[in-house]
Amino acid sequence: MDATTHPPAPRNEPVREYTPDSPQRASLATTLAALAGHQHELTCTIGGEQRMAGGDRIDVVQPHDHAHTLGTMANATPDDAKAAVAAALAAAEDWRRTPFDDRAAILLRAADLLSGPWRDRLNAATMLGQSKTAIQAEIDAACELADFWRFNVHYARTIHAEQPLSAPGTWNRLDYRPLEGFVYAITPFNFTAIAGNLPTAPALMGNTVIWKPSPTQGLAAHLTMRLLEEAGLPPGVINLVTGDGLAVSDVVLADPDLAGIHFTGSTKTFQHLWSTVGQNIAKYRGYPRLVGETGGKDFVVAHASANVDVLRTALVRGAFDFQGQKCSAASRAFVPRSVWGRLKDDLLSEVDSLPMGDVTDFRNFLGAVIDRRAFDRLAGVLQAARESSDVDVVAGGTADDSVGFFVRPTVIVGDDPAHEVFTTEFFGPVLAVHVYDDADYERVLHQVDQGTPYGLTGAVIADDRAAVRRASEVLRFAAGNFYVNDKPTGAVVGQQPFGGARASGTNDKAGSIYNLLRWTSPRVIKENFCPPVTSGYPHQL
Ligand SMILES: NC(=O)c1ccc[n+]([C@@H]2O[C@H](COP(=O)([O-])OP(=O)(O)OC[C@H]3O[C@@H](n4cnc5c(N)ncnc54)[C@H](O)[C@@H]3O)[C@@H](O)[C@H]2O)c1
Ligand SMILES: N[C@@H](CCC=O)C(=O)O
Image (cartoon, rainbow, N blue to C red; front, side, top):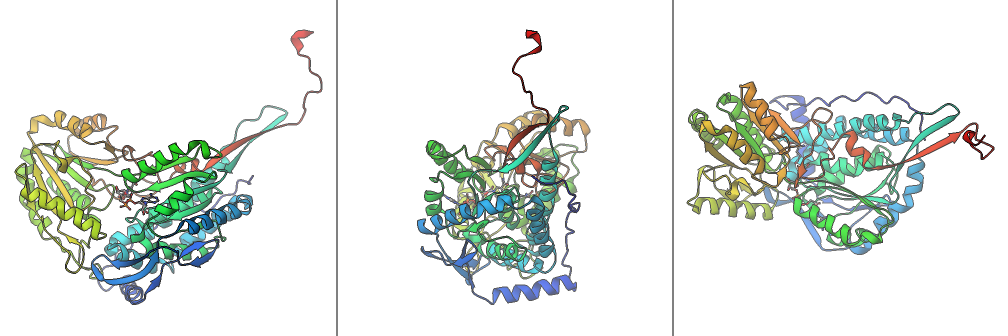
């Protein structure tokens, strides 16, 4: 058990802007060239040792220039997975005995390394590997990840300080034990910060971890692991296994010591993991904690009182930042006819003129979508929309994979809010717009609430206070992160803890006290200073 010390108070990492001629931009450009000019061996890290996984090789390419390979990894095999489990279990005893302050100091040091000497490297890896523009990489790989590490230490300390009352003659304590076993962290391609947070949050609470990042986030994940080692993370605390994860799950999900899953990715993958755990439930030592943040079909509802410039900006940034590949991205908008009349021309011309291309050219607003699979899926969506008589493609609608996986930002207008453009997560730069009669605001709010199985993010744009309040009431369960007169993306750690319910996940709010509580199994210790020495009770006298 730990003394209540006071780690440095967390603060949000300031966001750099990378304006032309700034030294920050010059430094990032130099690192981009250096990283792109090197072929990286994207190894597993098991028990502190780097080794290439034993399965099929996978080339990691730049999505905006797919002929340009950044490095190679391989699918982890069942033997690699077994070695990772063994390493996590071997490291567990020492790690759980490591005082909280030492565990915390490693993550605080990692945060400072990231905001200093590692910033350009992790930003550049995220730009090259995931096709993020400089600002999208900066708010993710530098700022959000440093924020996760600093704020998690603060929240974990708050948890440790929460202790029970003690009656006279006794001392009651809460011992915040880690889970018994190991945690399996599975992370998505789209956020380097999420990839870095999911293994380190359980580790901070004293757990050892097997981390399976997305192959298309492989370069940034590899560098995050090196950064954590430099910060002092002992071998075996986090064991990185590469590849698609299929063989890893076969081993890990059947292991009696599986104590938890920390997942972010698609709803489909999480449901598969959950049902496999359900089938294996009698095998485990305990009940594995299942934490998953998953997909969304995030909305913007405009009211007749909406400021058109606020609405246009929320739609353009909310739908098309990072090519719409944020779980929080606006992908369905509901706009009153009177507002659409004033919004349409400016919105469509702005969307059609958004510069898209190689993200190392800082003038671009969009890069490419992540890989061939995403490109083919999105190209199919656009083709179906172009051919459909039920919807109109009013901006974008084209895709070109000759150099990179480029999909033009697209706006589709449809009359039927039950059409799949309003219900299916496409996870790309596709915004569906439903134009409604101004008098139908109340009906539209209910449609937005019931229109999809998801409940992740959403926004209302309105100047009329009663309209804001009504949207907040009707849409209470439609979004775990609800925005008023803002885009539905860009949550900041410590300010808007992030996560949604319904099919969007377990809503444990990444980077918050609620998430960290899932990685501890508290023990109560009662110590009696004056224990009774006779068995009789006073009423017997
Ligand atoms: N709610 C959130 O906070 C949040 C954040 C980011 C992304 N997302 C969601 O993630 C999705 C996009 O990310 P993605 O394409 O990487 O998702 P995905 O589900 O395809 O993959 C996520 C991770 O799971 C791995 N995986 C897939 N099957 C596996 C298995 N059987 N065993 C082990 N690992 C397995 C993948 O390799 C990857 O590492 C979108 O649906 C998006 O909405 C949600
Ligand atoms: N937390 C991020 C979304 C993460 C999902 O991709 C946001 O708020 O935009």
